[in-house]
Amino acid sequence: MPPRTGFRRRRRLLWNACLTLAVVAVSVGGGVLARSFYASPTSSSGETSAQLPPFTDSSQDPPGRQRVVLKPGARRHPDSTVVRNLLQRHFDAINQRNYQQWRTTVVQAKRLNQPYGKWREEYESTRDGSVTVHRIVRGPEGTLRVIMSLVSVQDREDAPKDMPATCLRWRVVYQLVVEEGKLRLGQGLPDSSLHNECAN
Image: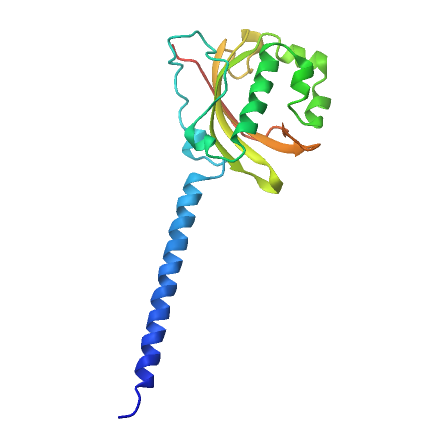
């Protein structure tokens, strides 16, 4: 009986086709899962466009705790400790009116745009708290994007002109870049913040 080379070849081709389809299905599924978890922080996903939650910490008055907190998704990022320490120094500097410390947390362009007089005027009555980092994702060219929320209290005249309130809840995306070998807060991203008046 002659060898069934045609049958074997068809069976081998069918097996290879099935294996290829399985690999493609796993790759596509993994890609969809990764895209949903690490969606672009500036997109209109639920992370940035959802209604901001009310201030519900009844144990403290706004702006709430001074310690920066990382949610589990942010804690899983390999740079989470460095990011948290940077943000802690940044918000401590604002709350303590420590301009020299603030300068160490931002890129040179921000330091040039905000000399001491302008910085002091901008943050004269501001206190920030309840800083919560929800996610840390990679941005272009080695940058990071930090998706976070916080509460600010300020004099009404120092609040944003579109919402002159003494207490605001913010959802923001910060850009972090490496400058002079250190991670620092970069220039603001367009359309990267939402704010609502605090609800009692």
